Image (cartoon, rainbow, N blue to C red; front, side):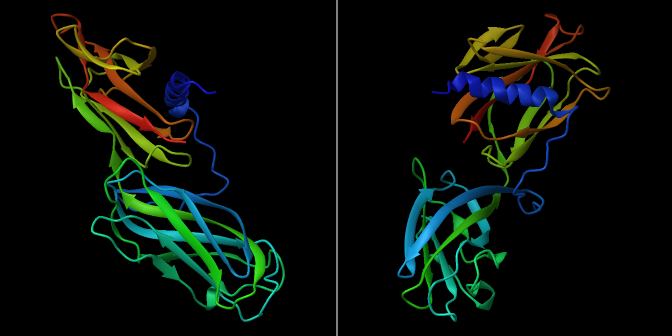
Length: 284
């Protein structure tokens, strides 16, 4: 079993090297993000259609997020084994606030080829748009079927949901000083990235990124520190403008941890300043 504290170590190790080593390009890249948007990928496993229909339930994104559109990428792995005129129909159902119909997409561009691997393409629909309903989690129901009965064959797909940008929860506790910490971007799941921004530190100041699985707070250097007891500390240095910026990859295990930054500041009575604390959630 993978320990959740290992997820935190991996996360902070990734942040420590992100500024000096660019992330490799993913094998299956996400669409280019729109400004202020995030992405969540739903992997549709290898699916065999016996008689032309298959239904799958998979974990969806966390509740309460607003979805703008969905992009499907489909690969046909076998001949359709049936009527050459069969098209593929894909339906995605997500629980939306106030309810809503499933997304249904079909068309000539989804015509099932006669040979395995002869077609692989993508298409986008905004038919699913709205805010996901509240609850501990969401389940995406996917129905795949052909327009003609009796088809036997296999496909697999992925669905990328474009959503509002996600900022990790700000718990406060900043001070003394004026440092501000934020992590905004994709949901921190596999394939997702978010940007960490730290501003307001003294120019070129030593920084200490502090992490814990628990969220204090306890008095510290004239302020309050949330990651208590401290589990991990990573040293970095602010730039000449008193900032630090880098991208953070998602993935690993599901874990919630707390992150805060301390910086040396000789102008303060206790010689240090604290940023606000964040509650950061990682997803597989």
